[in-house]
Image (cartoon, rainbow, N blue to C red):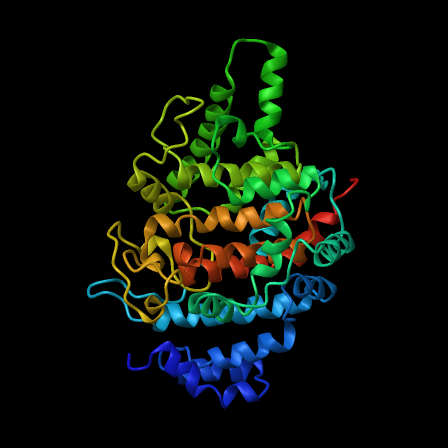
Length: 427
């Protein structure tokens, strides 16, 4: 590796003066050795799309949602190239194409089709408070015209500039509206939004409104048989886990998480929206909580505990279908430092742990993808995509290129996924 990012950007002054087609964009990537000589070209494309004022930028994006899809697609390709071409620590595994990758729309459609083939009916409904894109445009216009919300056109650090170029979008366009305005989302929407971006901090937070977990707790409370909320939560998690492990034992290989979704459809009488909640809850719990516990405590069950047990469970049971590059089933438990090209920029890369090779980080890909699918229950795809851009910009160094690219690939499926779900409204 001979070029620094600054040198590569300097080389691209010539590129930045031209409009780069997708094919030309990728050609420039590969000719760059490390794949970063197209940063200037990406910046140029972004500048053509995005406005300088942060909130107004978000408004223009919502008026033409194709712009964010273009940015996400180009960014995913760039991050995938970085991941496969970047230098790794001595002895570390290489990042290559993911042979198990499947689009989220295909995974979800397969599960629904399998459930319907058995003569079952599926239903779908949005959350109470669901609003279309015009609502969010109006809200952002209110924010943009508020004197208490000054424009954010400048970047304080070089790292912020690099992240913006890597993502191809300005993540602050969304954060300015959401973070500074607690009333941006209607109540029913905010519940789904919060559950998608935060870890569960108490046993009550795992009970997402409209989930099968909530329904089972309500059923038990009506029976009044003395079973605690924690017992109901753990019981349903163990039911799903046993189902997964039985399928793996019978088939002799990891299964698609789509089979979890199909199982939840069976448990939730064909409710797509309820089953999405349950699938996400289960995958997040199995990735980020102590899965060795046989009983839950309202305050302590949320600790991760033995992370290697979580890692092993995903490697053995859940196929890594998320993202075109990288596969957590090939990763060891060992962690490696990162001194690649992005390490030169504070907050862009975690130098102590190479996140692309960090097994515990990578097993979060499944629940990230199902989080995104779940967001279609609460909001139009462009809002979910903008939210993802904000999240990726905020935590770029903690996720790394492989995971963020996988998230972007899943986000690009949301328009089609949402359209499929809507077909089952009022059925």
